[in-house]
Image (tube, helix red, strand yellow):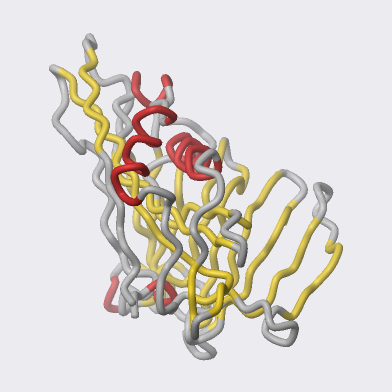
Length: 269
């Protein structure tokens, strides 16, 4: 069953004396040995960095690494030169993905391994100092988190109730609003057999500030009606989008659009 995509737009009218920041995107090409090359034709991978704010010595934004065929193999958010926030890697030969969150100490919280069928089969937990605490084989324990289910988890009351929840709880980050940062945030989250939210990841975003707000409102939604597979409640994997849209007299809607790059492990069934 295809994952239902939920979208809501915030139309904010901002009076501004001018756009205070510019989006900066840079692509760098590398050969198979990791040496920088000048042309895509000579490259094995290429890296795209999307930064925001005035030009600065340290990067703040999102960095994506692609194979030459445009398969995304790595994604990392940065804040002032440090890898902070969501991190994602994909091994196309094994069909395995690993994702989690980074902080100053390194890996923190839950890090998930996904198999070639897009089901989460393993979780590794790290403490706030970046030390590995426990590793759990979800498949062996009967707690696989499934992407494909007979009935996906539903927000209590359906789409209309979810829309009302966003209207009441979503707050456009002031700094992002002032700088004209806008676009679509794609959120993936996991629900347990009782409908509670186990974890939330932002898998595509124009800026970490919008990522944090999108994750916050999903967390505040509380329990969902659990996913069903083979007439049983199961752990489920779900995806939705939130559109942050700034309008001003000096900018147009979606001034920082996000390309909907397919993540290999996130293709719907």
